[in-house]
Length: 495
Image 1 (cartoon, rainbow, N blue to C red):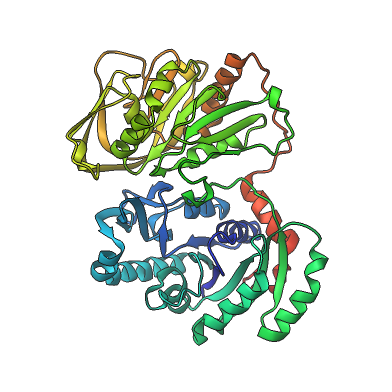
Image 2: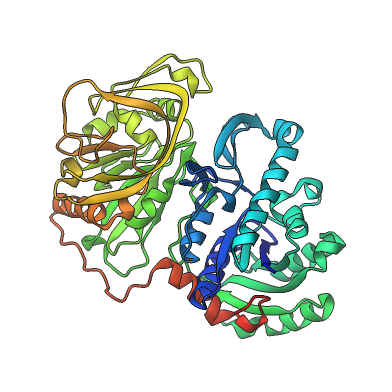
């Protein structure tokens, strides 16, 4: 019999993705076959993985990360329903890895709910046939009473998967015990009875200070608090843009490495209103001496050493937003390395045609920034594929060679208007300091990441800090957080 643990939360960002990844890695270390699962996800951070028909499809990045932690290949059964917000209250609906429609929330539930639930059940059953344990991740709060009748990731999953529920409570924001108590009170009785324990997450300080509260909440609810996980970011890719600053605000990540500012470099990333797959920047932020600064569209580039234009769920509208803010003029004046990935690549070109296919506004032709000799034409066809490319060093990757692997998820085809280098094969393009590519996951490849960062450090005349050879992978760090803080014998799995 397959055992299923549903990692649910009292709220969003309670640490569900990290704890699920940690649990996957712990089980895999002990020889248990384990698969991650999230029935319904909402995220623009997606990955291309194998589908059930031998092709490729999309899933949310968290399930891809958890599959890596579980040491098993990711596939579309691990996230059968994915909603990708694209602005104006509308999302692209992906079922079984394939984009099927653009829908407002109301239309999704009216038109697609039954199909989505059926896909979720079928995917779960296929996983249950193949694995000893399924680690399911919930979404948001498991006690949203207005959504209870259609809560696919929490209530429905707990029921059709006969899951044991592990409830996470975020201590960082305050009110943790009230949140835990209220969540248990508002859960449906049959799902409440499935809760075998709770974990307090993101705690800063001395955990003994929580002891009296833990004793009382256990007496009041009968639910044991299994452990307290300290605040620590293992460096796993984020699931959605809630972790980013709001548009118009700034934030810098990667500052916790003790490298002083005069030995560090900063990669600037415009905080696009419809940003997607910004997990492409995580490997850079994890490098010693590298800061990734998310910038308001109106920000100057004089305080950054390189610029990366990230992916976007709506290239045309985000390009127009950047132009309205004057960012294109400032980018023309910038003299450091520039990389555009996917939608960011399309923006760097000369023009986009048939633009109304993607834009929520009525535009047939939109001028790009004109920094690369590229023209992109949109169509309704969507490319979703895992790929491996041969590096032919040029531009910001001048010192790179070998191969790189990643994935492509995009609409539109880009062609050169004059010959230039194509360092990442396919539809890539580069000048002496500017690179455009459709390859998401480029910087997850050490050869590409090293070449890019070496180029950035060279432009600043700074020496790149060495990498600690004892550095643990983020998957191991997530597992260590769980193992060090929670008695694994209390978890209902064959550990």
